[in-house]
Image 1: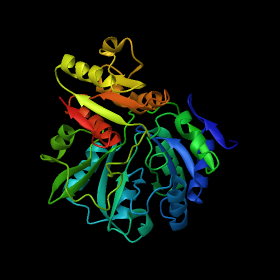
Image 2 (image 1 turned 180 degrees about the vertical axis):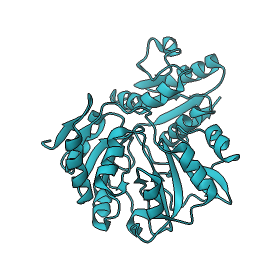
Image 3 (image 1 turned 45 degrees about the vertical axis):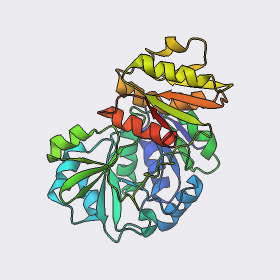
Image 4 (image 1 turned 90 degrees about the vertical axis):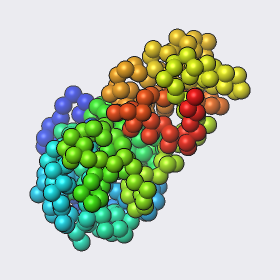
Amino acid sequence: MEKYLDAKNGYNEESLREIATIIKNGGLVLFPTETVYGIGTNGLDHNAVKKLYRVKKRSFENPINLLVNNLKMVEGLADNISPVEYKLMKALFPGPFTIILQKKDIVPSVLTANSNYVGVRMPNNEIARKLVEFSGIPIAAPSANISGELSATEFNDIIDKFSNSLDFAIDGGKTNLGIESTIVKVINEVPHILRPGSITPEQIKDVAGNVVLGEKNNSNLPSLNLAHYQLNVPSILFFNKDTQKMVNKILDLCQNYKKPVIVSSTENAEYYSNLPVVTVASKYDLENYSKNLFSSLRKAASFNPDVILIEGVKNEGLGIAIMNRLVNLCNENYVEI
């Protein structure tokens, strides 16, 4: 596409100012954050937000979060911010942390699925932060994917899907974290994690003194549909602390398929030497595991298999977010041996 900025090795601030003007005027821009790539537009422009929904093929019942660059901007969007909410934002902004707050009337109802709440996040990515700063408005920025497909961690993962719909695209290289932000809502002064991410329950508890993982009433909150990710290939998730038991179960199930592909840790790849296998990262390095997860799943799907068999990780710390994404991807087809 013509309107493209290669920012993998740096950028000119004047270029970002011009791109920020496109966003402010209601244009659609693809850009990196520290989590995944996003598509952004003016979060206060009703028509621009509607266009964003249509381009992503996203249900209007699924709200979109806003990116901000300081607490003053948050205060312009949200009412009745509690001491606990302030405490969380001051400790965890900027970063992969989204907090659900009571919205002011300035926030378009189309952005929030007509609810009284809006998600806000201050990204820890220089390009994303500068775009918010230079545009002077909160940016509506859902992940850069067609709804129901994997989020993108690399520019080339997604540009072909949107090249005819964008007003500008920025290639910032591979994102640092690889999975979307942790989403929290404070209920009765206690943070409830509505979607796990790179900010772990332990980190939130350290700030607020308490935390609840999960919330039964998830209606009208962003990105919480269990069918959020689909590879259009049957996918099965496995986990057991006993590696050999897990591997044996995966190898047994391989017998039932003609073209299986296995997604594994680097340590376990040797067990599948006679089969197509995609390695994610070391099972002891969950930061790299999360960073490489979506690109590894895309690679597995590129083999055109009849099934993808996926090794899980320990469901603790960052592993909670990784397993959340994998359970969703497999439509809860999870074999805990």
